[in-house]
Amino acid sequence: MILVDAKLSNETKIKSLKKYHIISYGCQMNFADSEIVASILENIGYDYTDDIEKSSLILLNTCSIREKAEQTIRKKLSSINFLKKKNSSLKIGVLGCMAERLKEKFLHEEKIVDLVVGPDAYRDLPNLLKEIEFGNDAVNVLLSKDETYADINPQRFNSNGISAFVSITRGCDNMCTFCVVPFTRGRERSRDPKSILNEINKLKENGYKEITLLGQNVDSYLWYGGGLKKDFKKANNIQKRTAINFAKLLDLVAKCYPDFRIRFTTSNPQDMDIEVLTTMQTHSNICNHIHLPVQSGSNKILKAMNRQHTREEYLNLISNIKKILPNCGISHDIITGFPNETEKDHIDTLSLMELVRYDFGFMFKYSERPGTLAARKMKDNITEKVKQRRLSEIIDLQFQHSYKNLSNYKNKLTEILIEKESKKSTKFWCGRNEQNIMVVIPKENYLPGDFVEVLVENNTSTTLIGFAKKKIK
Ligand code: SAH
Ligand code: F3S
Image (tube, rainbow, N blue to C red; front, side, top):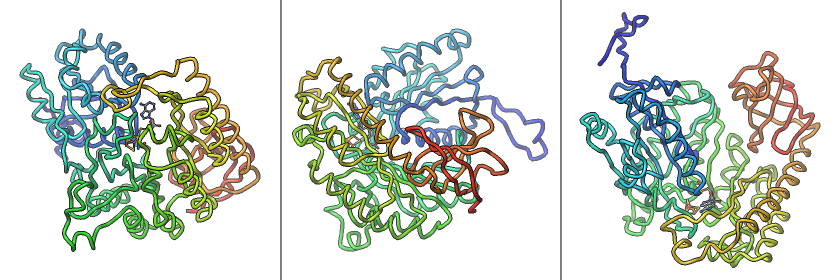
């Protein structure tokens, strides 16, 4: 059913009574995908609402990366059960990785779910929604070799209007033995650079100031006219000669949008090459920050994880980063308690951290994921107690490094892009510097979207506190 919005009736803006709400979990890719889904829904007459109780369609964009993530989503499903009891026409759908992993099993395991859609099947949502209106089950979890949603302009329903994600690749071919992503997001494919530039152009028109190029493994980006990364071998000579790798894409984006701040994530040490570092060095609008997951400092564990680099190669890359980009912020992901990890392996991880001295990181206990090689071939044999102790040691060490690194900013100037109000006080703005460190300043007369030079006065292990000296642009 449709009605004409009273205020806008002379513009004959038609408003839909169908309201939807999306909750996203997990990685930034899921948040970016939710914006694609929003665009597809708005095209067929749905309107976003913040108020879950007013929606006729609730979507959960799910994450499978660790067991805990899946438990959180199941808890959320039980907590919204009462809404379905109140409103029998309410439809509930699950999207993303958990949808892909569990497929139609989801419908049986969680009775309130009406709709299950995998990450490559969002274009089918209009048909699937029709099916559920007729009372049928609707499941589409087909993975694709070429879907990149290149032509869909994301509906930035949850944005601060300053900073946006732009996805450049989908899927992952790496098959790290602990990781469920290759199973839930399929093979790796890159997006047409023209469509990437188009999307950034629209962001520029809408006043955005910063983009983050997104992919499971951005350094492996390769455009040669479409198709899977693994099929590049079969490309013809012209395709090979004109192919665009990640460094070239970065260069292109940085040149076309000199006023934009450019970030990217995630880098995989095996694919990050010197060309990317020199491109970062050439362009001052590419932020000096590299998120470079290491997972473990032990060669034995890296091998068992099927990471395609050694500890020495990783440290060599770090030393190149520090040489070429002396001011570069570096962060990590580490997993502790992988099968057969000994105390010595754990100490190798701590010693690698001592050598790198990361600014921040994301640290996890190993969580066995069904279907992965590690789950099939290796016993999850590190006790919860040992995992917890090792994790605490890693977190404590990271805390010390973060605190020390951040205190080096004291009494120095750093440039930030103001993004939003600080969570702790309405009198302060917060924004990140190019090293991706959060900085808090008094609001004064500055506004979100301003680039300001900040004098840092104080710090915690995660935040710099200071005041703006002047607006740069
Ligand atoms: N390349 C990806 C990595 C995705 S997963 C990216 O874009 O970030 C993010 C992090 O989750 C990984 O780097 C790893 O540290 C962690 N992780 C993945 N699988 C895990 C598992 N089974 N148990 C614990 N942590 C895991
Ligand atoms: Fe997962 Fe390794 Fe890819 S961590 S996303 S399989 S690079």
